[in-house]
Length: 233
Image (cartoon, rainbow, N blue to C red; front, side, top):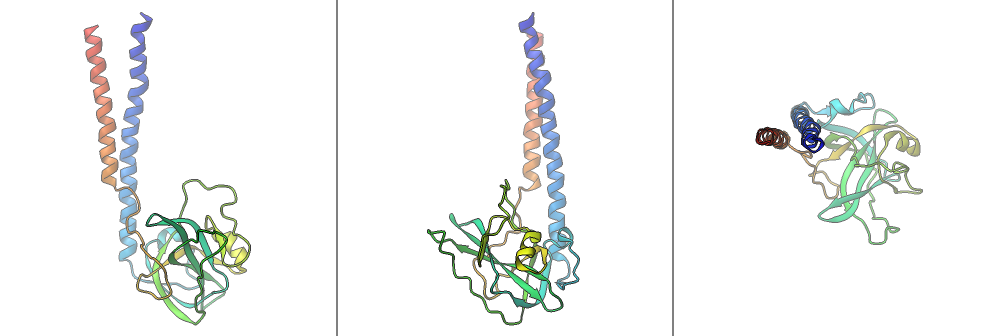
């Protein structure tokens, strides 16, 4: 008798999990639809004239095109480590761009550059300090799956190497404030490196719906097998 109860207990435990996973995937699909809607709205929005008074609203500004006037701080640059391109390891070059109208800067992602086999030898990322205008797209700093302790602590000297970009910590190292977002430099702009900015960097909602159908299908199959097994018994 105890043996016959085991299948029932297994079904009662697994079936709600399968159904919950299906609804979770549907919820993820809705989140991705909202994400892509924000992305498209940002790309279609008017160009932002970035100034020192621009609000620190990185989510609202994300994906919007931006123009800024000022000069690069060539003496204080960042190499964002552990960035892959074409199967090779390298860095994103983040250069502070000090705005004309105040003592505030925005970090400009000038693109990807390959790392030397000897990590003690850093690449040459020299850039002119002349007053200029830059154009690009506002975006969050690159994220990591698991943030290790100390990953946001920059190394000594310049250029400084860091695993995770944190605007508060970097502002303290620079000695002046920087925005909590970056500008991805236009591909056509000079003084940049390899730039392959992604328009879509996440799983599309249709894929989540497909996963939801699979979870619901497994739940239905399990329920039918249980009914058939019970009737046979």
